[in-house]
Amino acid sequence: YYFFNDEKVKINSRTRALSVRDDEEGHLICRSGDVLQERYEIVSTLGEGTFGRVMQCIDHRRGGAHVALKIIKNVEKYKEAARLEINVLEKINEKDPDNKFLCVQMYDWFDYHGHMCISFELLALSTFDFLKENNYLPYSIGQVRHMAYQICLAVKFLHDNKLTHTDLKPENILFVNSDFTMSYNVEKKREERTVKSTAVRVVDFGSATFDHEHHSTIVSTRHYRAPEVILELGWSHPCDVWSIGCILFEYYLGFTLFQTHDNREHLAMMERILGPVPSRMIRKTRKQKYFYRGRLDWDESSSAGKYVRENCKPLRRYLLSEAEEHHQLFDLIESMLEYEPSKRLALADSLKHPFFENLGISESLLSKKRIRFGDEKVFRF
Image (cartoon, rainbow, N blue to C red; front, side, top):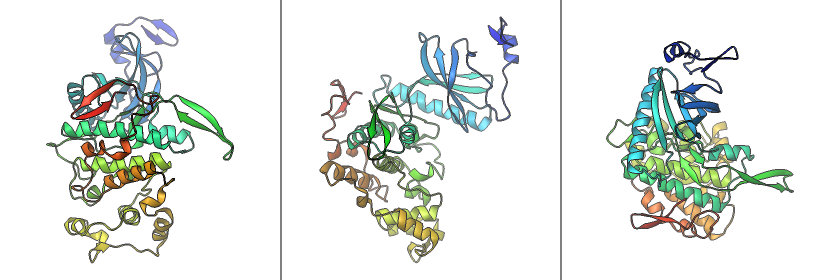
């Protein structure tokens, strides 16, 4: 059946194809109630990006379960990117059929009149959107710990399977359920939300790269971009670890660590927060224009210099408490924000970090059921 001028009419699939239309940007024109593949009934729009749209759908072949359907624009470069993403998602499904390693699960994919479509498990708000809707109130240290562990577990699984995500950021970490409790902060005269469950999934494998594949020169969203990427020294798994360090800082404080859009300024912020860029990296980089006589070419007295001085400070000065667990978190972040990729913490070691020792205490966060992962005990969420 198809709706035409609010009248329900039955038409055959050949006629239906004629009514499939795209807008001027290449998005599929569709609305609530439309059915794709005689299977996916559109309910609402979940989000939109340069690649296309994500719709909430009822999957009539999964017993009416709600799923997220990513509908790619009918534009060749985005279609090719979707094919690459499908390839990665199929590898993830093959290596982790039980979804133990917390990467978003792909259920199905198909080509719908030139639109690549990918069906996923339906998740909730991203950790960024929750933060934003909560007036950028940071997550508690216990919540940061649980989310951090899951992200390290998921990304270690990718690295073990010869993949680098390359675009880790709070927008690409989604809550399984973002329901919250509300309390009133008398001091700030506002309502504040606390997410009930910090179970998360890693999403968006559109830029994920296998070890053997061509590595683009520039990867990652600016604020989460590792120094070796900025300096064009080549990158691999450690660039994901740098991104995770930036993400954990943002969860803990509620704001971005490197708030900039310029490479030179980005490097100046790194130096202010983490100390000087190692001389080996300066010697090796093709980007000599950022340096002078082996040091960052940066004018402290300029307006940009003043901005960096006023908005950045050495990492440990961002601690909100002198309690041991806060210092442990910053020790973990520091190890992830090591300039030299070869010295940066590997995710196998991150899971053994003292910050995670108290992870199993709260039964409200974790079920008692556990899975084995190498020699480590791993919590099943």
